[in-house]
Structure formats: structure tokens, C-alpha cells
Image (tube, rainbow, N blue to C red; front, side):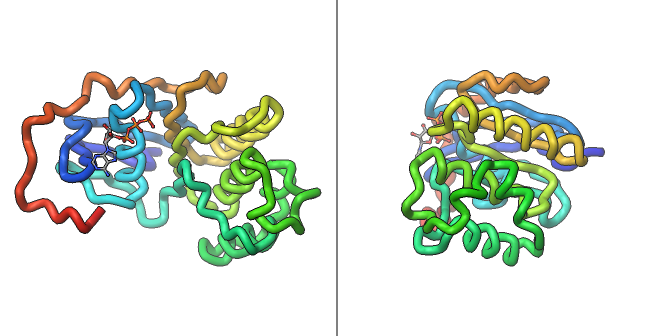
Length: 206
Ligand SMILES: Nc1ncnc2c1ncn2[C@@H]1O[C@H](COP(=O)(O)OP(=O)(O)OP(=O)(O)O)[C@@H](O)[C@H]1O
């Protein structure tokens, strides 16, 4: 089953198209790994897929509440504990049980620690654990393994595999080899010609 469908998509940063002419679908059980050099536009594409910015041209079709997004900035509430952070997000997304997320990301022993006191890798684990409590089918992940040690990368990979097995999908920008049976999509050929700037662009929107 198709979960997200991209047609003739151009994405822009600061009013400038960065990638153009993108067409792809992501279906149940599928992992799409985005590759391409620094600055080519992977983050911009992921933000557009997550609905955080509008397409410059073309469409992103997905049912409402399809995408859960995890990016560079972990977006954690530093004064809340690990458990409280997950409960907060479970509340926002209508989830209930946070225990599987605590367990699968090895956060049980850290559950009463304020998120602000965690190490970079522990924060990242919490940011990824949050995906599990959203119960959204498509995980859109921007460099999810940054700061993670080898054991934590393995936890992450297991969580993604379980997510796929339960009917989900993932779109991941990463420079590392994750060892999934993924579809690799190098976006480099879709780099936009940088000679078109639309003059009706509302800069404040981004
Ligand atoms: N606020 C901004 N205004 C205009 N251009 C920007 C802005 N922020 C980033 N850019 C440019 O937009 C382009 C796309 O950036 P983006 O972050 O999407 O790339 P990326 O492929 O994710 O890179 P990386 O692999 O380094 O994370 C880059 O050339 C970047 O310099």
C-alpha cells in the first residue's frame, strides 16, 4: 500500500529551488534512503515531506497524520524527564503506552532524568523513541544516527525494522550504511538550476 506519493515536486530553501522534478512513492514495509552531498537539499526535501514547509511546485500526497519527523534539533523539553517527554508526546499524538519506546531505546534506567541532563547520544535516543509513541506510519528521519554509539545504532535499526514489520515505512537521509534492505535514492541529479527565483515568495513563511 502506498503511504506517501510525490509528484513533480520542487522544494525550495529561502525562496530558491534546491531540488526539482522529484517523483517517488513510499509503500508499507519500505525504506527509502536519500543520498547526496552536503547542501544538495535532503533536509529541505524531508521538511517538505513532513509538511513543515510547502512544496514550491508539485505535490506530496499522504493521508492526514501520516508522517512523524525527527531532525537534527531533537526538540526535547529539557526540564521534563525522559518519561515526561515521552508522555507529553504520546498525549499530543494520541498514543498511550510509552513503555515499549523506553525499553526499545534502552531508556528505562534514564527515565527519571531531566532530558536536559542527557548526553548527546542519549538525547538522540529519546528523540528517536518519540517516533514510536506517535503511531504514525511514515518515519521521516534526518541523519538519525548522529551521536549514536554502535549499540544505539543497532537499537535504532531494530526499531525501524519492527516499524516496517508492523506496516510502517521510513524515509531516511543518512551518510552512513545502515545495513537495511533499503531503496537508495541519490537526489544529486535533481539539483535545481539556480537561475529561477520566484518574486511572489513570502520569505517570512519559512
Ligand atoms: N535559510 C536559508 N536560506 C537560504 N538557503 C539556505 C538556508 N538554509 C540552507 N540553505 C541552503 O539550502 C541548500 C539545501 O540545504 P539542505 O539543508 O536541505 O541540504 P542537505 O542536503 O540536507 O545537506 P547536509 O547533507 O549538509 O545536511 C544548501 O545549499 C544550503 O546552503
